[in-house]
Each structure stands twice: as C-alpha cells, then as structure tokens.
Image 1 (cartoon, one colour):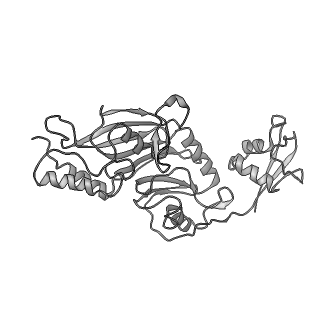
Image 2: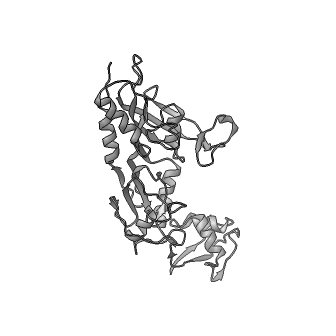
Image 3: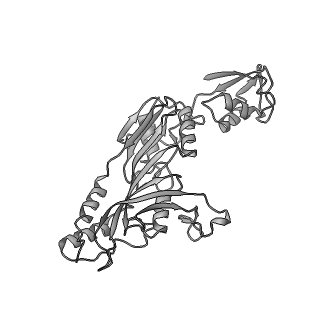
Length: 339
C-alpha cells in the first residue's frame, strides 16, 4: 500500500475535505478521493474521516492510504499492438479496424483494453483503484488510427484535462460520397442521441432548445475523384481532412452526413452503398465497385498531438492510411473526370 500525507494550511481552512485533498494530491481525482474517504482510507491526525463534505482544519495532518489496485475485470489477451510511443506514463498506438476500445456487448474480448492489460502487465499503477489502462478518448471499432492511453492515474488526469479543454491536435482523413460545398469550412452544430434510433447520434434541429452538446468540426477537401453527373462538374467522391475542436460520439460521421457528404462505407449514416458516378469503361467500373464494396466507414485518425501531461514534452504522432483506404483511394483516382 502507498501512503500520502498532506498538512492543511490556513488557506485550506473550511474547504470540503475531498476538494481540499484533490487540490493538493495531483495524482488523484476528487471522485477517487471521495471514494477513499467513504471507504475509511483517509485519517486526520490519526482519526479516520468518512465524510467527504467535512471542512478541512488548519494545521491538521491528513493521511491517505492507497490500497493496492485490484485486478481488472477484463482478461488480459496477447494481441499484437502497433505502438508508436510508450513511456512509464502513457502509450500511443495505431488502432486497426475491427478492434473495439472497450469490452461491450458483442465485443467482450479482443478489445484494446484486453490487449493493453497483457502488454502493460505490472506497469499499471491503478486508475480509480483498478489495475487497468486509462481510456481518455475513443475511436469507433471500425475506425483506424492514433489513440493515446494512460498507464498511471496522474497521466489519466492530465490527459483528461487536455481533452476537456480541447488542447489536443486531432486530424482525421475521410473518404466521402461527393465533395463538400464549400470545399472547406466549419460545421458548428450540436449533437445529441437520435430520437428515432437510440443507437444513432444526430444534429439537433433546434440549437436553441438546449438539447445536445456543442460540436465543432473543421474540414477541407484535399482531393476530388470523378464526376457525380454529366455536365455539373461535381466530384463523385473526395478525400477530406477533418480537424476536431470537440470530440463527440460519431462527430465526424454525423457532421459530414449533415452537410450531404456521408462517409463511403458508413453502415449507420451513409444511407446507401457506393457513390453516384458518371462515366464508362473499366476504370469507372473499378472505382464504383471499390466504393460499393468498402466494408466500413472510410475514416482514419491520422494525427494526434499534445503536451505530455507529466514530462511537458510536445508530442505529435502520425499514422499512415491503412491498406484498405489506400486501395480505395487508388481505385477512385482512376475515375474519369470528363465525358
């Protein structure tokens, strides 16, 4: 077991016990300290304190007993990981398509958490008292790309704060059905759970209703493919870079679908398979067939940049496009661009 001792000063006098301790114990969150107080793991001058609302006392010595972390419920599994960076505090990796981040119905094993429990055996200090990796953000099971995970509680707290304050660089690459108009811009639309399908998210129709969470996606089309219709000049598909200012569930998929350019292969927000493309010949057939057959949403977390919460080093990672998206783009580049 680990012990921390904190002496209250006159500036701490009268503060809630859990808030006061959280302000002085950088590696522990207020919710974690509240749980420890309720468990009897905090004492004042040798006497247990079990009320997190009790005011702090000037000059009192508070002792926090941190129990050894209990084993995580998910089982460790020896699953290969594409690791981009790792130190004692965190790990950055390139997640493949088909791997869920957390165990959940339909994906109880084979997840990133299962893999990290095996990879990080003996290195996890216990987050919330549990020996587990600290997931601070997620990408969908079928989305690929860069992800950062905490190995310690202090790193978990620091990364969580960076995500909450949006001090993270996050860029995604998406292949869309059609090209956005204008070719670059910002979608600033709140997102909430769909009232028609609870498994989906949706843009809130009335932003003044107060329903939903604000969401901001900056986008720019960086390459266009083929023609949608004869004579219009509109592209049949596009490679779009999206930069997230917020990180809501399915944000890019919802926002791009909202402006009329859903991701190719998106089984939830895509409405239909493939693309609308005008042309003829083998190249046209190959391109349209590749889009129609693409088995997942064409989305890749390409860049993740942040300041290391412990060492304060500026870090930036890039993950190359996965093979399936590279093959899709190669086929779309062959689409004819004239009559």
